[in-house]
Image (cartoon, rainbow, N blue to C red):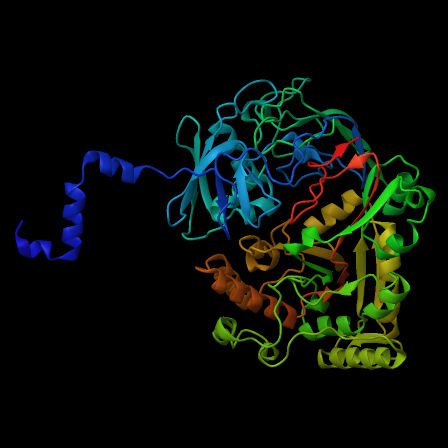
Length: 610
Protein backbone atom coordinates (compact mmCIF):
# COMPACT_ATOMS: atom_id res chain seq x y z
CA UNK A 1 0.00 0.00 0.00
CA UNK A 2 1.65 3.25 -1.10
CA UNK A 3 1.39 6.84 0.14
CA UNK A 4 -1.03 7.83 -2.64
CA UNK A 5 -3.54 5.37 -1.30
CA UNK A 6 -3.39 7.00 2.13
CA UNK A 7 -4.46 10.26 0.53
CA UNK A 8 -7.76 8.67 -0.39
CA UNK A 9 -10.08 9.49 2.50
CA UNK A 10 -12.04 6.26 2.43
CA UNK A 11 -8.92 4.11 2.26
CA UNK A 12 -7.28 6.11 5.03
CA UNK A 13 -10.24 5.49 7.31
CA UNK A 14 -10.21 1.81 6.43
CA UNK A 15 -6.53 1.55 7.27
CA UNK A 16 -6.97 3.37 10.55
CA UNK A 17 -9.70 0.92 11.45
CA UNK A 18 -7.41 -1.98 10.50
CA UNK A 19 -4.67 -0.51 12.69
CA UNK A 20 -6.99 -0.34 15.71
CA UNK A 21 -6.42 -2.94 18.37
CA UNK A 22 -8.85 -5.83 18.77
CA UNK A 23 -9.89 -4.31 22.11
CA UNK A 24 -10.71 -1.00 20.43
CA UNK A 25 -12.78 -2.72 17.76
CA UNK A 26 -14.61 -4.76 20.38
CA UNK A 27 -15.43 -1.60 22.31
CA UNK A 28 -16.82 0.02 19.18
CA UNK A 29 -19.14 -2.94 18.61
CA UNK A 30 -20.52 -2.89 22.14
CA UNK A 31 -24.01 -1.45 22.53
CA UNK A 32 -24.57 1.59 24.72
CA UNK A 33 -26.89 0.47 27.48
CA UNK A 34 -29.22 3.11 28.90
CA UNK A 35 -31.39 3.13 32.01
CA UNK A 36 -33.99 5.40 30.36
CA UNK A 37 -35.02 6.94 27.07
CA UNK A 38 -36.19 10.44 26.19
CA UNK A 39 -37.87 11.20 22.88
CA UNK A 40 -37.83 14.99 23.07
CA UNK A 41 -35.34 15.60 25.85
CA UNK A 42 -32.75 13.57 27.76
CA UNK A 43 -33.89 11.91 31.00
CA UNK A 44 -33.38 14.07 34.09
CA UNK A 45 -32.66 11.26 36.52
CA UNK A 46 -29.30 9.42 36.58
CA UNK A 47 -28.94 5.67 36.40
CA UNK A 48 -28.55 5.44 40.18
CA UNK A 49 -31.66 7.49 41.08
CA UNK A 50 -33.30 6.43 44.32
CA UNK A 51 -36.92 7.32 43.54
CA UNK A 52 -39.05 9.54 41.35
CA UNK A 53 -39.02 13.12 42.69
CA UNK A 54 -42.78 13.49 43.02
CA UNK A 55 -43.59 10.44 45.19
CA UNK A 56 -43.92 10.13 48.95
CA UNK A 57 -41.45 7.36 49.84
CA UNK A 58 -43.04 7.04 53.28
CA UNK A 59 -46.60 6.64 52.05
CA UNK A 60 -48.33 3.87 54.03
CA UNK A 61 -49.57 0.81 52.21
CA UNK A 62 -53.02 0.33 53.59
CA UNK A 63 -56.74 0.74 53.02
CA UNK A 64 -59.14 0.19 50.16
CA UNK A 65 -59.75 2.49 47.21
CA UNK A 66 -63.32 2.13 45.94
CA UNK A 67 -63.87 3.33 42.38
CA UNK A 68 -66.74 3.41 39.91
CA UNK A 69 -67.03 2.66 36.23
CA UNK A 70 -69.92 2.79 33.81
CA UNK A 71 -71.47 -0.04 31.83
CA UNK A 72 -70.02 -3.52 32.15
CA UNK A 73 -67.01 -5.70 31.28
CA UNK A 74 -66.48 -9.22 29.99
CA UNK A 75 -62.73 -9.78 29.69
CA UNK A 76 -59.42 -9.64 31.56
CA UNK A 77 -57.37 -9.92 28.38
CA UNK A 78 -55.56 -6.60 27.70
CA UNK A 79 -54.17 -7.60 24.30
CA UNK A 80 -57.26 -8.66 22.36
CA UNK A 81 -59.94 -6.49 20.80
CA UNK A 82 -62.58 -9.09 21.55
CA UNK A 83 -64.52 -8.27 24.67
CA UNK A 84 -64.74 -5.21 26.92
CA UNK A 85 -61.69 -5.22 29.27
CA UNK A 86 -62.27 -4.77 32.98
CA UNK A 87 -61.40 -1.42 34.49
CA UNK A 88 -57.96 -1.34 36.08
CA UNK A 89 -56.77 -4.69 34.70
CA UNK A 90 -53.48 -3.08 33.66
CA UNK A 91 -52.24 -3.11 37.26
CA UNK A 92 -51.93 -6.90 37.03
CA UNK A 93 -49.21 -6.62 34.38
CA UNK A 94 -45.88 -4.84 34.12
CA UNK A 95 -44.40 -3.20 31.03
CA UNK A 96 -40.81 -2.95 29.85
CA UNK A 97 -40.69 0.79 30.56
CA UNK A 98 -42.56 3.20 32.81
CA UNK A 99 -43.21 6.81 31.88
CA UNK A 100 -42.30 9.73 34.08
CA UNK A 101 -45.09 12.18 34.93
CA UNK A 102 -42.53 14.93 35.54
CA UNK A 103 -40.97 14.83 32.07
CA UNK A 104 -42.34 14.86 28.54
CA UNK A 105 -41.68 11.70 26.55
CA UNK A 106 -39.28 10.15 29.08
CA UNK A 107 -39.50 6.52 30.26
CA UNK A 108 -37.41 4.55 32.75
CA UNK A 109 -36.85 0.82 32.92
CA UNK A 110 -39.36 -1.38 34.75
CA UNK A 111 -39.18 -4.99 33.56
CA UNK A 112 -36.15 -3.88 31.57
CA UNK A 113 -33.06 -2.90 33.50
CA UNK A 114 -31.58 -1.31 30.38
CA UNK A 115 -32.14 -0.69 26.68
CA UNK A 116 -29.88 -0.09 23.73
CA UNK A 117 -30.42 1.16 20.19
CA UNK A 118 -28.19 2.13 17.27
CA UNK A 119 -27.75 5.72 16.19
CA UNK A 120 -30.29 5.33 13.36
CA UNK A 121 -32.82 3.77 15.78
CA UNK A 122 -33.52 0.93 13.37
CA UNK A 123 -33.97 -1.44 16.32
CA UNK A 124 -34.00 -1.51 20.10
CA UNK A 125 -32.84 -4.18 22.53
CA UNK A 126 -34.16 -4.52 26.07
CA UNK A 127 -32.31 -6.39 28.80
CA UNK A 128 -34.74 -7.84 31.32
CA UNK A 129 -34.08 -7.67 35.04
CA UNK A 130 -32.89 -10.99 36.42
CA UNK A 131 -35.15 -10.53 39.43
CA UNK A 132 -38.35 -9.98 37.39
CA UNK A 133 -40.81 -12.74 38.27
CA UNK A 134 -44.33 -13.85 37.51
CA UNK A 135 -46.71 -14.45 40.39
CA UNK A 136 -45.88 -18.18 40.28
CA UNK A 137 -42.19 -17.40 40.83
CA UNK A 138 -41.00 -18.14 37.31
CA UNK A 139 -38.76 -15.51 35.66
CA UNK A 140 -40.01 -13.07 33.06
CA UNK A 141 -38.16 -14.04 29.89
CA UNK A 142 -37.56 -12.72 26.37
CA UNK A 143 -39.92 -15.46 25.17
CA UNK A 144 -42.70 -13.82 27.20
CA UNK A 145 -42.00 -10.47 25.56
CA UNK A 146 -41.96 -11.98 22.06
CA UNK A 147 -45.17 -13.90 22.77
CA UNK A 148 -46.92 -10.79 24.09
CA UNK A 149 -45.88 -8.63 21.18
CA UNK A 150 -46.89 -11.18 18.58
CA UNK A 151 -50.22 -11.67 20.36
CA UNK A 152 -50.84 -7.93 20.47
CA UNK A 153 -50.27 -7.49 16.74
CA UNK A 154 -52.31 -10.57 15.87
CA UNK A 155 -55.32 -9.91 18.09
CA UNK A 156 -55.66 -6.14 18.33
CA UNK A 157 -56.15 -3.97 15.26
CA UNK A 158 -55.40 -0.91 17.35
CA UNK A 159 -52.03 -2.26 18.48
CA UNK A 160 -51.27 -3.76 15.08
CA UNK A 161 -51.64 -0.34 13.53
CA UNK A 162 -49.72 1.42 16.32
CA UNK A 163 -46.80 -0.99 15.97
CA UNK A 164 -47.02 -1.48 12.20
CA UNK A 165 -43.39 -0.34 11.72
CA UNK A 166 -42.15 -2.98 14.16
CA UNK A 167 -41.33 -5.92 11.93
CA UNK A 168 -40.19 -8.44 14.52
CA UNK A 169 -39.42 -9.20 18.13
CA UNK A 170 -36.84 -11.88 18.87
CA UNK A 171 -34.79 -13.27 21.69
CA UNK A 172 -31.17 -12.13 21.23
CA UNK A 173 -29.65 -13.16 24.55
CA UNK A 174 -30.40 -14.91 27.81
CA UNK A 175 -32.25 -11.83 29.03
CA UNK A 176 -32.27 -9.76 25.84
CA UNK A 177 -35.10 -9.16 23.39
CA UNK A 178 -34.73 -7.10 20.23
CA UNK A 179 -37.40 -5.27 18.24
CA UNK A 180 -36.57 -4.45 14.62
CA UNK A 181 -38.17 -1.67 12.59
CA UNK A 182 -38.81 -1.22 8.87
CA UNK A 183 -37.71 2.40 8.95
CA UNK A 184 -34.82 4.36 10.41
CA UNK A 185 -34.62 7.53 12.51
CA UNK A 186 -38.12 7.17 13.93
CA UNK A 187 -37.25 8.56 17.36
CA UNK A 188 -40.44 7.33 18.98
CA UNK A 189 -40.31 3.63 18.10
CA UNK A 190 -37.68 2.53 20.67
CA UNK A 191 -39.79 4.11 23.41
CA UNK A 192 -43.29 3.00 22.46
CA UNK A 193 -42.43 -0.70 22.21
CA UNK A 194 -41.85 -0.49 25.95
CA UNK A 195 -45.48 0.46 26.61
CA UNK A 196 -47.56 -2.68 26.07
CA UNK A 197 -48.30 -5.16 28.90
CA UNK A 198 -46.13 -8.27 29.04
CA UNK A 199 -48.06 -11.52 29.55
CA UNK A 200 -46.76 -14.94 30.69
CA UNK A 201 -46.35 -17.27 27.72
CA UNK A 202 -46.31 -20.44 29.81
CA UNK A 203 -49.58 -19.52 31.52
CA UNK A 204 -51.48 -18.60 28.36
CA UNK A 205 -50.26 -21.73 26.62
CA UNK A 206 -51.52 -23.87 29.50
CA UNK A 207 -55.00 -24.97 30.56
CA UNK A 208 -57.49 -23.43 32.94
CA UNK A 209 -58.87 -25.10 36.07
CA UNK A 210 -61.43 -26.92 33.94
CA UNK A 211 -58.73 -28.39 31.73
CA UNK A 212 -59.60 -26.17 28.75
CA UNK A 213 -56.71 -24.73 26.73
CA UNK A 214 -56.42 -20.97 27.14
CA UNK A 215 -56.69 -18.80 24.04
CA UNK A 216 -54.87 -15.45 24.01
CA UNK A 217 -56.87 -14.35 20.97
CA UNK A 218 -60.16 -14.26 22.90
CA UNK A 219 -61.62 -12.44 25.82
CA UNK A 220 -61.67 -14.37 29.07
CA UNK A 221 -62.96 -13.96 32.61
CA UNK A 222 -60.37 -16.26 34.11
CA UNK A 223 -58.24 -14.09 36.45
CA UNK A 224 -54.87 -13.90 34.70
CA UNK A 225 -51.46 -14.34 36.25
CA UNK A 226 -49.22 -11.31 35.95
CA UNK A 227 -45.95 -9.83 37.09
CA UNK A 228 -47.50 -6.55 38.28
CA UNK A 229 -48.18 -5.20 41.75
CA UNK A 230 -51.80 -6.37 42.00
CA UNK A 231 -53.78 -9.56 41.47
CA UNK A 232 -57.48 -10.13 40.88
CA UNK A 233 -58.80 -11.35 44.22
CA UNK A 234 -62.50 -11.62 43.36
CA UNK A 235 -65.07 -10.40 40.88
CA UNK A 236 -68.69 -10.55 39.89
CA UNK A 237 -68.80 -10.75 36.11
CA UNK A 238 -69.66 -7.42 34.55
CA UNK A 239 -70.49 -5.84 37.89
CA UNK A 240 -67.58 -5.65 40.34
CA UNK A 241 -63.88 -6.44 40.50
CA UNK A 242 -61.46 -6.42 43.42
CA UNK A 243 -57.67 -6.16 43.10
CA UNK A 244 -55.34 -6.92 46.00
CA UNK A 245 -51.75 -5.74 46.43
CA UNK A 246 -49.26 -8.57 46.14
CA UNK A 247 -46.88 -8.79 49.10
CA UNK A 248 -44.59 -10.93 46.94
CA UNK A 249 -44.46 -8.42 44.07
CA UNK A 250 -40.93 -8.68 42.71
CA UNK A 251 -40.60 -4.98 41.85
CA UNK A 252 -41.95 -3.29 44.98
CA UNK A 253 -38.51 -1.98 46.02
CA UNK A 254 -37.35 -0.77 42.60
CA UNK A 255 -36.53 2.96 42.54
CA UNK A 256 -39.13 3.41 39.77
CA UNK A 257 -41.80 1.96 42.13
CA UNK A 258 -40.86 3.50 45.47
CA UNK A 259 -43.79 5.44 46.92
CA UNK A 260 -46.30 3.86 44.54
CA UNK A 261 -48.98 1.14 44.63
CA UNK A 262 -50.03 2.15 48.14
CA UNK A 263 -53.59 0.82 48.42
CA UNK A 264 -53.95 -2.69 49.77
CA UNK A 265 -57.16 -3.09 47.77
CA UNK A 266 -58.52 -1.34 44.68
CA UNK A 267 -62.09 -2.23 43.80
CA UNK A 268 -64.43 -1.18 41.00
CA UNK A 269 -68.22 -1.17 40.94
CA UNK A 270 -70.02 -0.75 37.64
CA UNK A 271 -73.06 1.51 37.35
CA UNK A 272 -75.68 2.04 34.66
CA UNK A 273 -74.66 5.66 34.08
CA UNK A 274 -72.69 8.54 35.55
CA UNK A 275 -75.63 10.00 37.48
CA UNK A 276 -76.16 6.76 39.39
CA UNK A 277 -72.42 6.57 40.07
CA UNK A 278 -72.48 10.14 41.40
CA UNK A 279 -75.19 9.24 43.88
CA UNK A 280 -73.07 6.33 45.09
CA UNK A 281 -70.15 8.73 45.55
CA UNK A 282 -72.32 11.22 47.47
CA UNK A 283 -73.47 8.38 49.72
CA UNK A 284 -69.87 7.48 50.57
CA UNK A 285 -69.87 4.16 48.71
CA UNK A 286 -67.25 5.40 46.21
CA UNK A 287 -64.07 7.21 47.30
CA UNK A 288 -62.97 9.13 44.22
CA UNK A 289 -64.65 10.60 41.18
CA UNK A 290 -63.46 12.43 38.10
CA UNK A 291 -66.27 14.64 36.85
CA UNK A 292 -66.75 15.06 33.11
CA UNK A 293 -69.85 17.23 33.20
CA UNK A 294 -69.59 20.96 33.86
CA UNK A 295 -73.25 21.14 34.87
CA UNK A 296 -72.89 18.37 37.43
CA UNK A 297 -69.67 19.99 38.66
CA UNK A 298 -71.51 23.28 39.14
CA UNK A 299 -74.73 21.97 40.67
CA UNK A 300 -74.34 18.49 42.18
CA UNK A 301 -71.41 18.94 44.56
CA UNK A 302 -73.13 21.06 47.18
CA UNK A 303 -73.91 18.23 49.61
CA UNK A 304 -72.98 18.29 53.30
CA UNK A 305 -69.76 16.28 52.98
CA UNK A 306 -68.36 18.90 50.61
CA UNK A 307 -69.44 21.78 52.83
CA UNK A 308 -67.84 20.33 55.95
CA UNK A 309 -64.62 19.22 54.24
CA UNK A 310 -65.10 15.47 54.29
CA UNK A 311 -65.10 15.57 50.48
CA UNK A 312 -62.49 17.63 48.66
CA UNK A 313 -62.90 19.17 45.19
CA UNK A 314 -60.05 20.18 42.91
CA UNK A 315 -59.73 21.40 39.34
CA UNK A 316 -56.20 20.57 38.20
CA UNK A 317 -54.40 21.64 35.03
CA UNK A 318 -51.42 19.29 35.42
CA UNK A 319 -52.45 16.71 32.82
CA UNK A 320 -53.17 19.41 30.23
CA UNK A 321 -49.72 20.99 30.43
CA UNK A 322 -48.53 18.32 28.04
CA UNK A 323 -51.74 17.08 26.45
CA UNK A 324 -53.91 18.43 23.67
CA UNK A 325 -57.50 17.31 23.23
CA UNK A 326 -60.02 17.11 20.43
CA UNK A 327 -63.56 16.26 21.52
CA UNK A 328 -66.05 16.28 18.71
CA UNK A 329 -69.12 14.91 17.04
CA UNK A 330 -67.71 12.43 14.54
CA UNK A 331 -69.67 11.89 11.32
CA UNK A 332 -68.88 8.55 9.71
CA UNK A 333 -67.40 9.38 6.31
CA UNK A 334 -68.07 5.81 5.26
CA UNK A 335 -71.72 6.95 4.99
CA UNK A 336 -72.55 8.68 1.70
CA UNK A 337 -74.37 11.63 3.29
CA UNK A 338 -71.18 12.75 5.07
CA UNK A 339 -68.68 12.45 2.22
CA UNK A 340 -69.04 16.09 1.09
CA UNK A 341 -67.02 18.51 3.24
CA UNK A 342 -69.69 21.18 2.78
CA UNK A 343 -72.21 18.93 4.53
CA UNK A 344 -69.85 18.48 7.45
CA UNK A 345 -69.19 22.22 7.62
CA UNK A 346 -72.93 22.88 7.59
CA UNK A 347 -73.35 20.56 10.57
CA UNK A 348 -70.89 22.77 12.45
CA UNK A 349 -72.94 25.89 11.66
CA UNK A 350 -75.97 24.16 13.19
CA UNK A 351 -74.13 23.49 16.47
CA UNK A 352 -74.92 26.16 19.09
CA UNK A 353 -72.07 25.82 21.57
CA UNK A 354 -72.73 29.15 23.27
CA UNK A 355 -76.29 28.22 24.25
CA UNK A 356 -75.17 24.83 25.58
CA UNK A 357 -72.31 26.37 27.56
CA UNK A 358 -74.59 28.98 29.14
CA UNK A 359 -77.62 26.88 29.94
CA UNK A 360 -76.18 23.43 30.61
CA UNK A 361 -72.56 23.99 31.62
CA UNK A 362 -72.84 27.29 33.50
CA UNK A 363 -70.09 28.78 31.36
CA UNK A 364 -67.57 26.16 32.42
CA UNK A 365 -66.52 24.98 28.94
CA UNK A 366 -64.26 26.15 26.13
CA UNK A 367 -64.86 25.54 22.43
CA UNK A 368 -62.24 23.28 20.89
CA UNK A 369 -60.70 24.73 17.71
CA UNK A 370 -57.72 22.44 17.13
CA UNK A 371 -56.86 18.76 17.08
CA UNK A 372 -54.05 19.74 19.48
CA UNK A 373 -56.17 22.15 21.50
CA UNK A 374 -54.55 23.72 24.54
CA UNK A 375 -50.94 23.25 23.39
CA UNK A 376 -48.34 25.02 21.28
CA UNK A 377 -48.90 22.33 18.65
CA UNK A 378 -52.20 23.93 17.67
CA UNK A 379 -52.06 25.79 14.34
CA UNK A 380 -52.58 29.53 14.70
CA UNK A 381 -52.89 32.38 12.21
CA UNK A 382 -51.80 31.71 8.64
CA UNK A 383 -49.10 29.17 7.75
CA UNK A 384 -45.54 30.44 7.65
CA UNK A 385 -41.99 29.12 7.33
CA UNK A 386 -41.57 25.37 7.20
CA UNK A 387 -45.27 24.77 7.67
CA UNK A 388 -46.01 26.86 4.59
CA UNK A 389 -43.35 24.94 2.64
CA UNK A 390 -45.07 21.67 3.55
CA UNK A 391 -48.49 22.95 2.50
CA UNK A 392 -47.17 24.47 -0.72
CA UNK A 393 -45.84 21.04 -1.64
CA UNK A 394 -49.40 19.70 -1.26
CA UNK A 395 -51.19 22.65 -2.83
CA UNK A 396 -53.27 20.53 -5.20
CA UNK A 397 -54.32 18.15 -2.42
CA UNK A 398 -55.47 20.48 0.37
CA UNK A 399 -58.36 22.96 0.59
CA UNK A 400 -57.33 26.39 -0.71
CA UNK A 401 -58.57 28.02 2.47
CA UNK A 402 -55.62 26.68 4.48
CA UNK A 403 -53.52 29.41 2.84
CA UNK A 404 -55.99 32.26 3.31
CA UNK A 405 -58.17 31.62 6.37
CA UNK A 406 -57.23 30.63 9.91
CA UNK A 407 -59.76 28.09 11.15
CA UNK A 408 -62.55 29.44 13.34
CA UNK A 409 -65.75 27.86 14.60
CA UNK A 410 -69.09 29.57 13.99
CA UNK A 411 -70.11 31.75 16.94
CA UNK A 412 -73.65 32.00 18.26
CA UNK A 413 -74.76 33.74 21.43
CA UNK A 414 -77.83 35.70 20.37
CA UNK A 415 -80.91 34.97 18.22
CA UNK A 416 -79.62 36.89 15.21
CA UNK A 417 -76.33 34.97 15.11
CA UNK A 418 -78.21 31.70 15.45
CA UNK A 419 -80.44 32.58 12.49
CA UNK A 420 -77.46 33.70 10.40
CA UNK A 421 -75.56 30.48 11.11
CA UNK A 422 -78.56 28.29 10.29
CA UNK A 423 -78.98 30.16 7.00
CA UNK A 424 -75.29 29.54 6.27
CA UNK A 425 -75.83 25.84 7.02
CA UNK A 426 -78.75 25.70 4.58
CA UNK A 427 -76.64 27.43 1.93
CA UNK A 428 -73.81 24.93 2.35
CA UNK A 429 -76.25 22.03 2.09
CA UNK A 430 -77.59 23.54 -1.15
CA UNK A 431 -74.06 23.75 -2.58
CA UNK A 432 -73.62 20.08 -1.70
CA UNK A 433 -76.81 19.03 -3.51
CA UNK A 434 -79.38 19.23 -0.71
CA UNK A 435 -82.36 21.55 -0.49
CA UNK A 436 -84.86 22.56 2.15
CA UNK A 437 -88.35 21.59 0.99
CA UNK A 438 -91.00 22.50 3.47
CA UNK A 439 -89.54 21.33 6.74
CA UNK A 440 -87.31 18.60 5.30
CA UNK A 441 -83.70 18.79 4.09
CA UNK A 442 -83.72 16.46 1.09
CA UNK A 443 -81.29 15.30 -1.56
CA UNK A 444 -82.01 17.28 -4.73
CA UNK A 445 -81.61 14.15 -6.90
CA UNK A 446 -83.22 11.42 -4.83
CA UNK A 447 -85.61 13.34 -2.63
CA UNK A 448 -84.31 11.42 0.38
CA UNK A 449 -84.25 13.33 3.67
CA UNK A 450 -80.96 13.95 5.45
CA UNK A 451 -81.26 11.53 8.33
CA UNK A 452 -78.81 10.09 10.83
CA UNK A 453 -78.47 8.61 14.27
CA UNK A 454 -76.17 9.87 17.04
CA UNK A 455 -75.00 6.80 18.94
CA UNK A 456 -74.39 7.13 22.70
CA UNK A 457 -73.38 4.72 25.45
CA UNK A 458 -74.89 6.52 28.43
CA UNK A 459 -78.26 8.16 29.13
CA UNK A 460 -76.39 10.88 31.02
CA UNK A 461 -74.98 12.16 27.70
CA UNK A 462 -78.40 12.70 26.15
CA UNK A 463 -78.97 16.11 27.72
CA UNK A 464 -75.82 17.39 25.99
CA UNK A 465 -76.94 16.10 22.59
CA UNK A 466 -80.62 17.02 22.67
CA UNK A 467 -80.05 20.74 21.97
CA UNK A 468 -78.01 19.83 18.88
CA UNK A 469 -80.74 17.49 17.67
CA UNK A 470 -83.29 20.29 18.14
CA UNK A 471 -81.10 22.70 16.16
CA UNK A 472 -80.69 20.22 13.30
CA UNK A 473 -84.45 19.71 13.12
CA UNK A 474 -84.86 23.47 12.53
CA UNK A 475 -83.20 23.00 9.14
CA UNK A 476 -85.08 19.84 8.26
CA UNK A 477 -82.57 17.19 9.36
CA UNK A 478 -83.95 14.03 10.93
CA UNK A 479 -81.35 13.56 13.68
CA UNK A 480 -82.05 10.98 16.37
CA UNK A 481 -80.37 9.80 19.55
CA UNK A 482 -79.80 6.10 20.13
CA UNK A 483 -78.40 5.01 23.49
CA UNK A 484 -77.13 1.45 23.86
CA UNK A 485 -75.31 -0.47 26.59
CA UNK A 486 -71.54 -0.21 26.77
CA UNK A 487 -70.81 -3.64 25.27
CA UNK A 488 -73.02 -3.00 22.25
CA UNK A 489 -71.55 0.47 21.89
CA UNK A 490 -67.97 -0.83 21.91
CA UNK A 491 -68.77 -3.47 19.32
CA UNK A 492 -70.58 -1.03 17.06
CA UNK A 493 -67.79 1.54 17.23
CA UNK A 494 -65.12 -1.10 16.58
CA UNK A 495 -66.96 -2.19 13.44
CA UNK A 496 -67.80 1.44 12.44
CA UNK A 497 -71.51 0.62 12.63
CA UNK A 498 -72.68 4.16 13.40
CA UNK A 499 -73.71 7.40 11.71
CA UNK A 500 -72.30 9.81 14.28
CA UNK A 501 -70.70 9.45 17.71
CA UNK A 502 -68.76 11.42 20.29
CA UNK A 503 -65.01 11.11 19.76
CA UNK A 504 -62.15 12.15 22.03
CA UNK A 505 -58.48 12.10 21.05
CA UNK A 506 -55.79 12.96 23.57
CA UNK A 507 -52.53 14.20 22.09
CA UNK A 508 -49.10 14.23 23.69
CA UNK A 509 -46.42 16.85 23.08
CA UNK A 510 -44.67 14.27 20.94
CA UNK A 511 -47.11 13.27 18.18
CA UNK A 512 -45.88 10.34 16.15
CA UNK A 513 -46.95 6.89 15.03
CA UNK A 514 -50.37 7.12 16.66
CA UNK A 515 -51.36 9.83 14.15
CA UNK A 516 -51.56 7.21 11.41
CA UNK A 517 -53.98 5.26 13.59
CA UNK A 518 -56.07 8.38 14.21
CA UNK A 519 -56.29 9.82 10.70
CA UNK A 520 -54.36 7.62 8.24
CA UNK A 521 -55.92 5.93 5.22
CA UNK A 522 -54.70 2.45 6.21
CA UNK A 523 -56.59 2.70 9.49
CA UNK A 524 -59.82 3.95 7.91
CA UNK A 525 -61.18 0.43 7.44
CA UNK A 526 -59.22 -1.45 10.09
CA UNK A 527 -61.74 -2.80 12.55
CA UNK A 528 -61.20 -1.26 15.95
CA UNK A 529 -58.91 1.54 14.79
CA UNK A 530 -59.07 5.06 16.20
CA UNK A 531 -59.74 6.51 12.75
CA UNK A 532 -63.36 6.80 13.77
CA UNK A 533 -64.30 9.26 11.04
CA UNK A 534 -62.95 7.06 8.24
CA UNK A 535 -60.50 9.67 6.94
CA UNK A 536 -58.66 8.56 3.80
CA UNK A 537 -56.85 11.61 2.47
CA UNK A 538 -53.53 11.56 0.55
CA UNK A 539 -52.38 14.92 1.93
CA UNK A 540 -53.07 13.82 5.50
CA UNK A 541 -51.10 10.61 4.90
CA UNK A 542 -48.10 12.54 3.57
CA UNK A 543 -48.08 14.98 6.48
CA UNK A 544 -48.28 12.13 8.99
CA UNK A 545 -45.16 10.62 7.43
CA UNK A 546 -43.40 13.96 7.82
CA UNK A 547 -44.33 14.03 11.51
CA UNK A 548 -43.07 10.51 12.13
CA UNK A 549 -39.78 10.99 10.28
CA UNK A 550 -39.08 14.61 11.27
CA UNK A 551 -35.31 14.99 11.84
CA UNK A 552 -35.68 17.90 14.26
CA UNK A 553 -38.24 19.21 16.72
CA UNK A 554 -38.73 22.26 14.50
CA UNK A 555 -39.61 20.03 11.54
CA UNK A 556 -41.95 17.97 13.68
CA UNK A 557 -43.85 21.00 15.00
CA UNK A 558 -44.18 22.47 11.50
CA UNK A 559 -45.65 19.19 10.22
CA UNK A 560 -48.04 18.95 13.19
CA UNK A 561 -49.26 22.48 12.52
CA UNK A 562 -49.83 21.56 8.87
CA UNK A 563 -51.74 18.41 9.85
CA UNK A 564 -53.92 20.33 12.28
CA UNK A 565 -54.74 22.92 9.64
CA UNK A 566 -55.61 20.35 6.94
CA UNK A 567 -57.79 18.27 9.28
CA UNK A 568 -59.71 21.36 10.34
CA UNK A 569 -60.10 22.73 6.80
CA UNK A 570 -61.68 19.44 5.68
CA UNK A 571 -64.24 19.58 8.50
CA UNK A 572 -63.75 15.90 9.28
CA UNK A 573 -65.39 16.43 12.71
CA UNK A 574 -67.64 18.98 14.40
CA UNK A 575 -65.49 20.30 17.28
CA UNK A 576 -67.25 20.37 20.63
CA UNK A 577 -65.78 21.54 23.91
CA UNK A 578 -63.46 20.77 26.80
CA UNK A 579 -62.79 22.27 30.20
CA UNK A 580 -58.99 22.11 30.03
CA UNK A 581 -58.71 20.83 33.59
CA UNK A 582 -59.14 17.59 35.50
CA UNK A 583 -62.04 17.98 37.91
CA UNK A 584 -61.86 15.55 40.78
CA UNK A 585 -63.70 15.01 44.05
CA UNK A 586 -62.59 12.59 46.74
CA UNK A 587 -63.33 11.66 50.32
CA UNK A 588 -60.74 13.02 52.73
CA UNK A 589 -59.50 9.57 53.71
CA UNK A 590 -57.48 9.75 50.48
CA UNK A 591 -54.21 11.69 50.38
CA UNK A 592 -52.29 12.85 47.33
CA UNK A 593 -48.68 13.98 46.94
CA UNK A 594 -48.12 17.70 47.29
CA UNK A 595 -46.91 18.94 44.92
CA UNK A 596 -48.22 16.68 42.20
CA UNK A 597 -46.01 15.79 39.23
CA UNK A 598 -45.78 18.52 36.62
CA UNK A 599 -47.71 16.64 33.92
CA UNK A 600 -50.05 14.36 35.82
CA UNK A 601 -52.09 13.76 38.94
CA UNK A 602 -50.55 10.38 39.73
CA UNK A 603 -53.84 8.68 40.46
CA UNK A 604 -54.08 6.07 41.83
CA UNK A 605 -50.46 4.90 41.90
CA UNK A 606 -49.05 7.80 43.94
CA UNK A 607 -51.97 8.36 46.31
CA UNK A 608 -52.54 6.64 49.65
CA UNK A 609 -55.13 6.16 52.39
CA UNK A 610 -55.01 7.62 55.90
